[in-house]
Image (tube, rainbow, N blue to C red; front, side, top):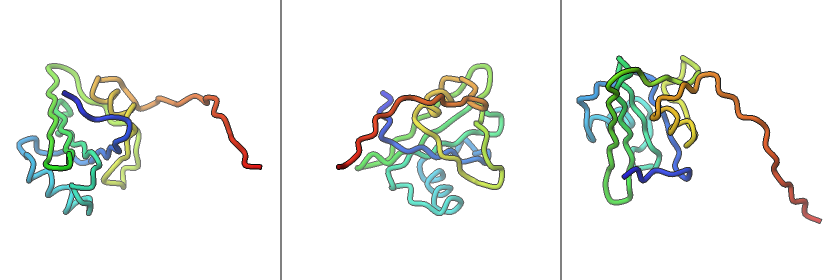
Length: 120
């Protein structure tokens, strides 16, 4: 069951990650490399060097959840990002597209109507 929704915030760690790491190892990366709390409620995303495995670490209120996917062929594509940054924020849509194998490098969001309510 994939219990992550649009209400979650996703952070993709830009360095290749050893997929032998589990809860404690990934929490260590979040604390030591990203200087964040793994219990913040954000979803931390890790991809291995060959880009054929991905793990998502999420604090679910009473414990950690770990999602893991291994591709039989192909690779996960990183979106465009600042190479000087160790983390990249992803929207829910970008996260789903990344997991589904859709290339998100050149995707541009088109303008949509949004109502503006002015206070009188």
